[in-house]
Image 1 (cartoon, rainbow, N blue to C red):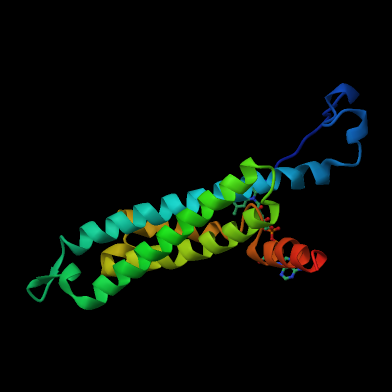
Image 2 (image 1 turned 180 degrees about the vertical axis):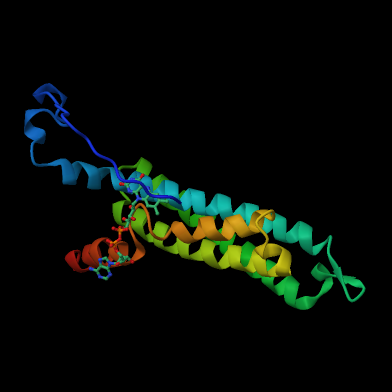
Length: 178
Ligand SMILES: Cc1cc2nc3c(=O)[nH]c(=O)nc-3n(C[C@H](O)[C@H](O)[C@H](O)COP(=O)(O)OP(=O)(O)OC[C@H]3O[C@@H](n4cnc5c(N)ncnc54)[C@H](O)[C@@H]3O)c2cc1C
């Protein structure tokens, strides 16, 4: 990512453009927060997309690359890695669907944070394993898994950093519910 400074000079926003109308004054933060639950579940879905892509690459590379006369995928350590990756991917996907259903019913605000927290951290692990299966090639820029690993890393930062989700959304909701 590259970052740039932005300046807004002589910008005038008329009253009628205030988000939320006249009652919206001073409530921008709350409007933004209300939109975040949607952003969190879509980030969970993106984590699953990245994991799925990384898993598929890992399987095909394991069946393609030969070391010491055998495909990497024929070694037990690789098979165990693939089994764990597939299990975590399945759990993440089903958890995301379950939270999506809750949100369709108007609930699931806290669960949207939980599923983001879980799937984004899981994506880091799954993409790491996919990269590891590729050995040195996994670190090469022309190799898709190197990109998946970097892409997975940012998911725990935007749409609510994991510390903020854990501390201010999940833990607080759980304690308030007691
Ligand atoms: C690729 C990318 C795309 C982005 N897209 C958007 C976008 O479209 N729209 C948008 O509005 N923003 C966007 N962001 C910004 C993103 O939402 C913020 O980077 C994110 O919310 C974290 O804020 P920060 O970077 O200011 O970190 P900081 O708030 O400076 O936090 C730094 C670290 O301290 C931790 N921390 C903060 N508070 C506490 C605490 N109380 N206790 C313990 N630890 C704490 C954080 O979790 C984090 O690990 C994007 C960021 C990236 C990297």
